[in-house]
Length: 241
Image (cartoon, rainbow, N blue to C red; front, side, top):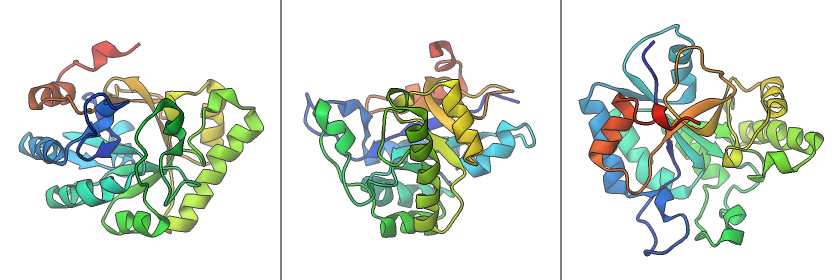
């Protein structure tokens, strides 16, 4: 199995002014279009985590990348969905079940600009547009800072809440802030999720732990050449800690 990149995006929108906190987490719509076009030109298919799973398990082979969006921003629906549909790609958006229709309030203490998250109805539009929803806890919490029963609620109830909203199974999870322990991976598995992604940087190698998958970050400063290097070479693999 060739290494499989799982791309990580947050916001697909024009970045706030220079000096804004975590400005790097914005990818301009024009850059996102360019990146998806490059994938298509290179012969890759962009896939949701459900469609990617057979490749991660070694049951299928091919030129594929996973495409994931963290947090559930409305700008993903507005700016990313049309591009994904144009290229015939699917993706997974990890949503925070108790923040639908609100903003990224968890970022407020560090001064990150507040941005609209998809409502339940908009999340259904995302699904109806051929995309997938994953779990990202109920409140975007620091799992390692809370007791296990509460962590279990955040992980497991998030799944059922999102399934009620979207009308489709929610089989994939993402650890907020990339924070987790082996006890959390056990909870994720017991809750019925089939994969869980992290903030660990690397492409996925054969035999990767499905409950702790590394990903490839795409940020505002990612140039076209760097994007190609992230997908095709060991550029990100060398950054694995």
